Image 1 (cartoon, rainbow, N blue to C red):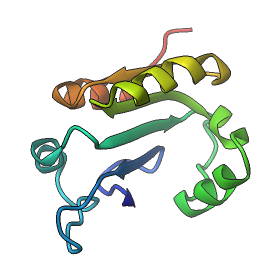
Image 2: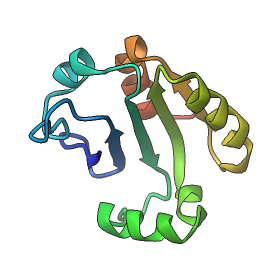
Image 3: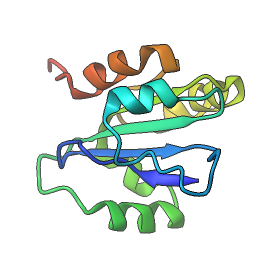
Image 4: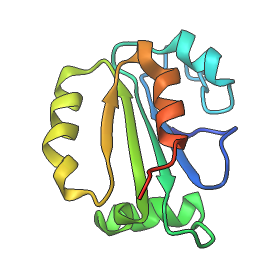
Length: 124
């Protein structure tokens, strides 16, 4: 199940993919600490900080554009992927050079570090 996570500033795209234990298992609206506590080994969370400085596109527009290709992802300055899935970690590391900004993979235990890192500013 893919959900857009809530509770993030408008310049952060946040999504979670997880296998729901029950049909009513909704994690998008939970506090970050609650999501961290529920994170399973197959969960994948993506936090991407919008980089252009202009008004970010809506999450719906981003999802629609991402279905058409990866062009929208160049609009992000930092991308943090939170997962314990080994194959996902390897895939992200393989595709990271195709992104215009830094991309890092964090384990579920490092979820708070990922939130801090994605919100930090690059020094140019």
